[in-house]
Image 1 (spheres, rainbow, N blue to C red):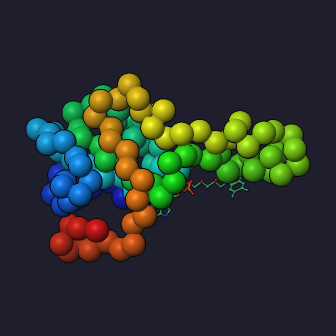
Image 2: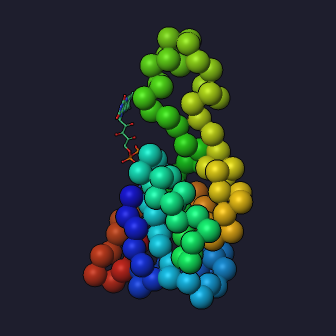
Image 3: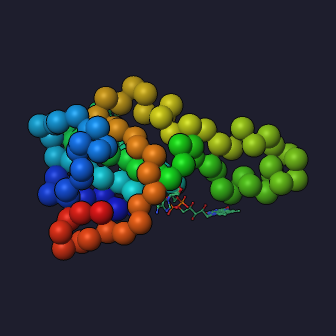
Length: 107
Ligand SMILES: Cc1cc2nc3c(=O)[nH]c(=O)nc-3n(C[C@H](O)[C@H](O)[C@H](O)COP(=O)(O)OP(=O)(O)OC[C@H]3O[C@@H](n4cnc5c(N)ncnc54)[C@H](O)[C@@H]3O)c2cc1C
């Protein structure tokens, strides 16, 4: 997970990001940490771009219950977009980040 402020360049054309008057925060990874941070920033004065290689979040501590048939897989997994459907400032994109160029503020 990597939250950065507006200076972080993100290709708005290829990601189809709307322009915003607010600082942009890019969060890579919608795991426990990324999801929690994005929830905290929902409906605040930021444009939040949340990126994950999957379109779903999984509750990893409950993997064992699924493995032992105590829970259905759908009970520990949910679509990330659903979490933010009421948060106008959180934009979710499915993408796999391959590298980050910290000096250029690019990835
Ligand atoms: C089986 C199991 C049981 C666990 N039980 C417990 C427990 O009982 N208690 C506890 O405190 N912790 C437990 N943990 C650990 C806990 O799940 C992790 O500490 C926690 O998930 C870490 O959160 P995170 O946000 O750093 O990473 P993650 O939750 O792993 O999230 C990382 C996210 O980033 C995405 N991602 C990764 N690389 C890229 C990339 N290159 N591009 C785009 N997206 C990317 C992934 O798809 C993922 O959604 C358990 C873990 C496992 C696997």
